[in-house]
Length: 429
Image (cartoon, rainbow, N blue to C red; front, side, top):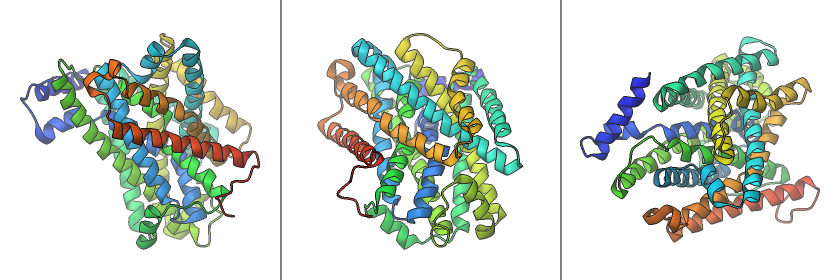
């Protein structure tokens, strides 16, 4: 296992020295964006995408497209930060921001990590529970055991983990590709939904914010910068440019695949549920409704992808949580402690009898509200020449990033206005 990581690092060195190139060279650099992309296909996406497709058909597909473009931009910036500085976003925040700001950022990030784990842990547990007829609590225990087992491979370096997560991502993608072959998708309505922005009512706004919260993930922004640390030994700006080129290509490919999976989720829900079953809003209901509508195979693929999503994203969430805590606080917390702390909310939700899908959607709204913290920090650092040197981002990227962060902040303020019963003039219904 260790040999895989050593061979990968040796191959990367050959690419940087000009001894290897092409597709073989690219494959050596592939991995970090694939791991980060798991955050964009986690069980929170299932909950929000089912509600979007069932309740509004193909109308909210444009939100998925927009969220995915924002994700590409910020994941590329995060990777750039790690490549150029050799530090992750949490470490840079600790080093350059005032102590009070650092503590606030850490607290917000920890709350986001708990919301993330709630979605991921519940998703895997729901899938196992439905597929094997187990009590939900038993599904949660099995999810925890599998997660721990996969995390053991971290001791062998970065490559085994990248291959395991990559295999799970491939399984999720294959399941949804098969779903689209079974579901009677309206392709003209799909194109219209992807290209025509609109929010029919306040409930659609809630789901739209949830989609953004489920797609652009705070912990993924922190994690990607850390995944680039120590992966390739760079000795010059020429090396950094080459690593950056491969990284940007991987980000576009990995997140394009994640975006297509998300769109497939909405399209499947729209084609199966919107006409006659628009009330479907829960993962459990979606599974039971899929069986008579599209057959047992479609329902089985749905659950298989959900389990793969829950387990892989739970592993990645734990990795990100550890990196965030170490980066902000400068001390290491054992993974089993980290997992215990972040899984407690999920067990509490099940024990209290809270509707699991509603908890998933609520967790994504929390993530959307926490999201501007790493987004703003990333914009600040990417624009600082004393940190980025020759790799400081240009004005066009800065403006695009600022607009994206502003849009997320604006959506959050509108969402909070709706929660507190204030009218939102530009929305109908």
